[in-house]
Length: 253
Image (cartoon, rainbow, N blue to C red; front, side, top):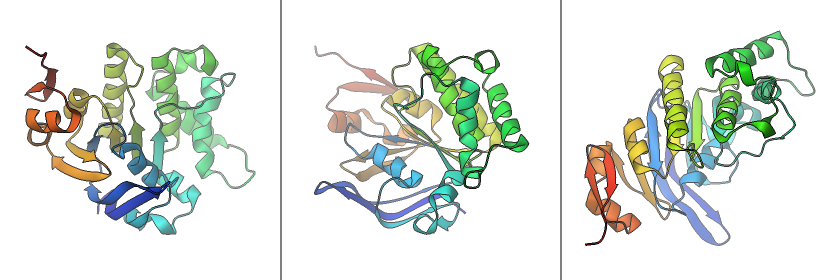
């Protein structure tokens, strides 16, 4: 059974087609990188899975039809790490990570021992112990990204959605964040779906890449098969060479 399945999914907004008849399956434990230029529909595909946007067609999570799930049930299956998370600056890292347990609480219920243990485990896994008492507003970009992933991990959802997870991070923090996610995927059996701009990083970490444009899937498969210099030039208007999954810009002569 697939972790995620789209069947002719379309999204319309403001009189425009944002996602146009996408059909796609993601296997359990797989890392799929979704690529495409700005406005291609990458983020909207993640929002469909997170249950935050209306759509036509069918989508399922772990074999359960998304349209029949309550928001709380969706949040138990899917954790989203947004591109630009809005965080309360005065909240501590420990308090923020504990918020990941919200989908598992009954209405008006307080966190119990099991919830606090799950949050503490996420903090340990992400090496956030020394930052646990720090306020979110005092963190660096890389530290904050780890805290956001910590909240997602505490959520204990089997499907992790990443929306441009390396935006505004330097190369060192980019590598640290992606290595961390990949380690968690292998150790915890997470399914990872990541919308990404960096073609090289997407190719290096994704088991499979899906190339989208104007809301449609143009190609999917291994990075070697999908990311050709001709295809990248046509879609992005960029002259590149692709060598073993590394996309190298080529300057005009």
